[in-house]
Amino acid sequence: MKKIDLFTKLLPYLGSYKLNRWFGYKNFSPMTLTYSVTAACQSRCKTCQIGAMFCQDPARPEKDLKLEEIERIFQSMNPVYFFNMSGGEPFMRNDLPEIVDLACRYLKPRVVHTPTNAILTDRIIENTEKIVHIVRKYDASVPFTVKPSIDGVGGLHDEIRGVKGNFECLLRTIDGLKKLEEKYDNFHLELGTVISNFNIDHLEEIEDFVHSLGVESYRNEVAECRTEFFNLQDEITPSAEIYQRLIKDFAAKVEENIGKKKKLARTTEAMRVVYYDIAGKILEEKRQVIPCYAGVSNVHINYDGGVWPCCVLGYEKEMGNLRDYNYDFQSLWHSEKAQTVRRYIKEKNCACPLANQAYSNELLHLPSLCKAGVKSIKYSFK
Image (tube, rainbow, N blue to C red; front, side, top):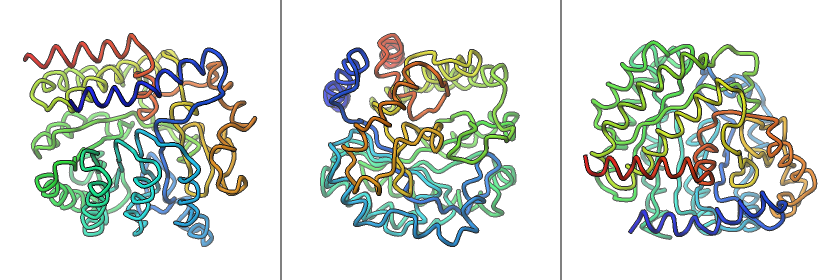
């Protein structure tokens, strides 16, 4: 039933995006909202400069949207299907549960998700449990997922993340979140790895370690240069040839284990396998392998109220700032500037393997969706 419910509720969104792409963007709302709740971050990752950029900015805390501002923005939006939080480090905002409460009240998401660097173990576990209760208060069938990052095992993780002791914090955080997963049926723990030039020789070790922890959901994505990360000059992305070789082995292992997982996990894992193939082709061919719906199916709200089509284009193609639009999302979303950004993407002036957007693109690309469906069904019988 959950699988049927998922696609039934997504169909109105998918049809709207197709029609708008064919006949001009007029009447539609995003199905996925990613909100960077803060730029604050303790990490000094080799793949991201957000923490380093904002740690010395005394004015940064004042730039974060306040709860009353967030409420006005969410009130002006239509319901979304996926509500993703991002950062910086999301749990550095101690009012994260209140933000989720506002999202559940006004946006009525069907999935709530946040990543974390896992450093603030006690706060992460405490506020995760608060969020679980908030989500259950509105709808107990809505899953809440937390994805701690693991970019290496032991000292390698600390080296890449730029914080000594981060790996030990990660292990404690995983242990606490696993206990919550046993306690609440709508809470799910995931782990995620950013594949970069700093860990490409250690992926098998990382994957084996993750499986040894008994974590059911594990995903990875390739390190990217994004305006959001202030890392455009950094040599962090593996070559297409290396990435394709690595991801082929990774995808094969994922497929081996798909049949052992629950129905919803089988569906998402099958979509990830298709994504890995698409990401490799994008890196190799440097073009949109399938049409991109960034700024249409997905939207990104930055910590300071800036609205982006995606976090890769970020500051470079900002559609506007909600503070300048009196917190009225609809006015900004349908502005001429927003339309100009959509035309830029539709004309294939950009191409990237951004995972968050790629999954939406898969849903809107029938051949990719069919591939994922076949894999999910095929491995159900293994």
